[in-house]
Amino acid sequence: MDKKQLSRRGLLGIPIAFAMKQPIVAAVRAQQASLTELPANLPRPKDDGAARHLKGLAIPDLALPSTANRQVNLSKITAPRIVLYAYPMTGQPGKALPAGWDDIPGARGCTPETCGFRDHHRDLAKLHADVYGVSTQSTDYQQEMVKRLEVPFEVLSDEYFALTRALRLPTFTVDGMTLMKRLTLVIRGGRVEQVFYPVFPPDKHADEVIAWLTAHPVGTAG
Image (cartoon, rainbow, N blue to C red):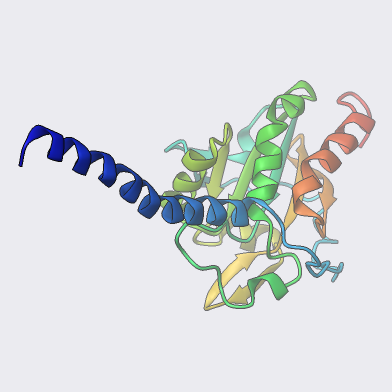
């Protein structure tokens, strides 16, 4: 085969390889978008009273593993305020969500919620609030999400339900997994100052928290 034939074959091969690659790229992008965008007509979660006991509770003296490869004891943090958002489970590219996930009120939207806190991280810092996420997934599972989404704050693993049991946080079960229901705690002085429950829509929740913090600045009564 002479140089002209090789050159012609190479040129012909480029569009073929490109055409073969395009559906794969499109599928990956569509899958990523499906995790970051909320489907229409998601069922709205109702307040079942499962978080009414939380306001005023002391944060338990226990440490949870963090995506920063350290142990975090929320009761020992001296920040003026802590925003701790609990979520059921973030999806992963290439892995199916549990069957009927979108039909469970309050289940869908963990990735958009996390992206909201990520995008407003500096705004929350200006309001003297440290942000942490928490779920019952393992640290390894959470670290993949934190790296992929470029999350600037730590996410805590309550894989063994220490915090869930200590605070009696609301949970639900799907596919044999016990998951946290979506809620957010504002912690001040080692106690729960404010509770957001239920949370909906999750992709706008960071704005809701910012509005509350702005209306209740540090130095005033909660």
